[in-house]
Length: 518
Image (cartoon, helix red, strand yellow):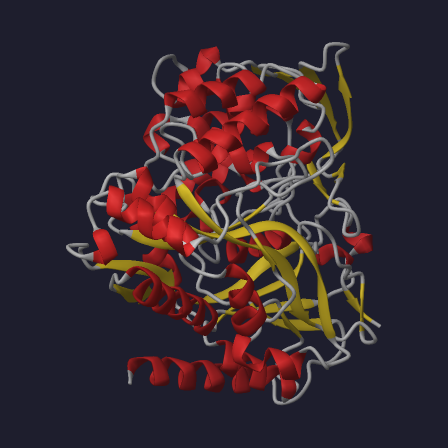
């Protein structure tokens, strides 16, 4: 009943926003969830990233066609000969309250991001910066961090190893500058309407929790002339069938997720946009809980369901069965994976002390509220019951609660997860599973794996790729610390005969500043 009420409220809210298809340079999108926060240093999901691209801009941002780095606040950058020092030259830009943006903003923001007391998600993404790991883990103070403001417009960063893809990395919100003057003045309330200060192409006009967020152009944005949209409205509806019906009725202009049960119908639409996506859908084992602390059990579970049948019969969007976590790419060839082998799965389960599933405790699969995640979990639930004789129950939570359960309390047995690359390099996947990593929600604790990842950070070229492949072998073939399920494809609905500046790209990143109504 509560869910029905929420859906009805969402429909009524949208009816108040728009009575027909949006007019002029306005766009309405279903963002799929209520955001955790608007603070770039404390976000971790795709819905929040989409908001970040409206309200903030980093040193670099994403090219809408290639997903590669293009100038943002930094108008250019240079590397030292050893590729271990990067110097960013900042353009003349201001925060939305008119305060100049300087190199000191990035120094202070990165210190805040890495402050152990801040307990920020994604802090370990900055570990490629010299001194970042020592500071974030409490081994040293902020003086260990090798970043400095040479002058107001020059920001210098020293890296632990040659990192030619660093400009791609800093497009990510983990490297964002935040308005420290507003943070110091308002504390946690700095992100609220009336207090909010950003530096992106849009401003926060309205935030009604569980109803909508509304953004309007930022007249002080350095590239305001490029911005065409006059209004963006994001809706937090997690019911995909509801959002699809709204799209068909002309009350929503863009969906980035669609109901799986209607994929056969949706794939026939001319406004269906589908392409490969640099990401993996997977399940996280809580490796601290019995019997999931046994690699034999984890491997048995992974080998006992048919991924090909799952993508053919359930997801139906062209997804590719995944037996490894890191997708293949230029220079990176992952191991073959465990495959689908019911007999071997039964053998491993018996060796772990559970022949034919006897004595195996009931456990739960946690997922965030979505009919798609529910259908995938139900398929795997049935496969495990039929093939291994074990029972699993399903539990769903709304987005923010689910993220807290998965990332903060770790109070789960197996949890659904998805990872879209933050940049186009295998390390965006492999860095997640180091000991104590902020994305290491299953509490995987392998010194062998972690040592390989830190070793790769000091290497370059083919040598580095070989080390990353060795790490993937440990993660998947030896320990099987996570369960890959499929490699993503994008499933969007947006009519490109009406909308320009929106392109299919590897990271599924669509900067708002380029989108416009034709």
